[in-house]
Image (cartoon, rainbow, N blue to C red; front, side, top):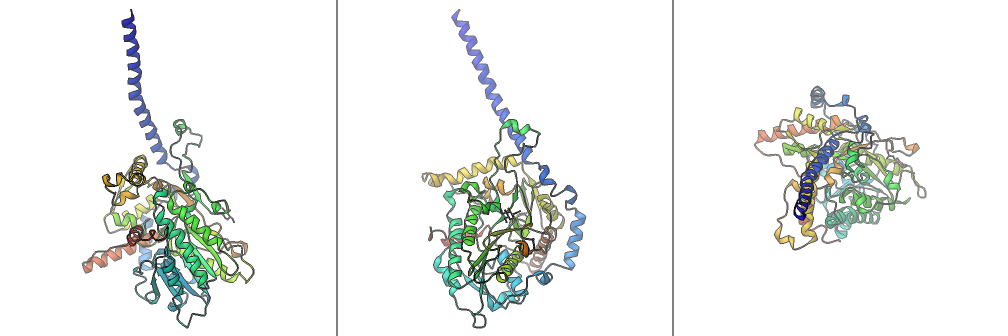
Length: 515
Ligand SMILES: *[C@@H]1O[C@H](CO)[C@@H](O)[C@H](O)[C@H]1NC(C)=O
């Protein structure tokens, strides 16, 4: 009798394990499928801020293009919105870049002489609007701000006698943008340039006698990492709590007034380093050295070297999982203007012993319009760019899973040196596909509510001069023009993107000397 008994027991466990073998993967697939649907959707709260009636249509885009073709937005066209000239000298770190470059152009436009401006940057200016005209007369001092020596040297270089007696303002916009690394194992470069570099600039500025320093930080400091892996039963909860935690976020300044978060409370190394830099700058604020920070929110754009518009324009075939994602953007022109508004407040409302309430804190700045969707941007490029562009839609869940695998692969040889010989390093853009990229590509909205308030009630009296629609369309227009001209002359257009800078800096040894 014992034999059949054993057999049927065996059958039963066999049956159960069979069920498990099939059921677990099936349940897992259902879970991933549903999570994918969730990530591909837009919460009510966010779509209300950017209603479907505001989507960019082909007609709207074409009309905007024609209008800007006839009447494009230049530093001169918005000159009346630039805060008036001050009798001061200027150091602009990162002055060859997007925001720093616009600061230089706006200073010149309002009548500051070229000899009263100094660009302190790792790279010489090569923007078309800076290599000709008055901007080409501005002094450039090649500098690695992660080095104390190099930074001090750049600040202590003598000025032309015509301006040497004037008070000094420093605009500190230099930084490295590494959008997707979050491990402390690869924190060195961000730490060296964004944290130690900022400390070096603050020290050198003070030593050089500056009395105002305004630094560019980032709206992304506010971002918290998304908790994607929510309990399966919550995925079908229709009460509104379905969303993975932090799936949509407001980019505000609240975090600055709270204790600093631990490293993993920021979405990546970049915002962690910018948060630390912001506290260095604001911590240095005194009546004789007034400081403040501007947080552009979130993607800064305005030149084909940028990531937001330049990225897709440059790539042609563009894999993406974000067409539905709603975000606020900030044109370099608006970001630069915010710095000048801040300077005006710090220069006028201070005495030797008192400080305006605006000093020593950050302000978020974004374009003067509601947020847009990535699909608005893609439609603009598809409709208006004369170069090839095609989006390749990808399921977000695939990117989420892949990003963890890629990060694991990249960190393995850093954790265990034995893998250094076995695993070839990843090259190309796939390196950027790490989990943090999901956080920066989620629904993120910002507002100008604080920065736009009148100066009397604690704001900076800022108003943006260029909308996201005009700014992005104009960038495509300029892209088309550059390509048309290059084609006529038989050359190729090559851009130095901000994402390529970290590689150049690593090659030059930044980050090895300081930490
Ligand atoms: C406005 O500033 C206050 C502090 O003055 C801050 O708590 C708040 O978060 C800011 N609002 C936004 C939207 O950034």
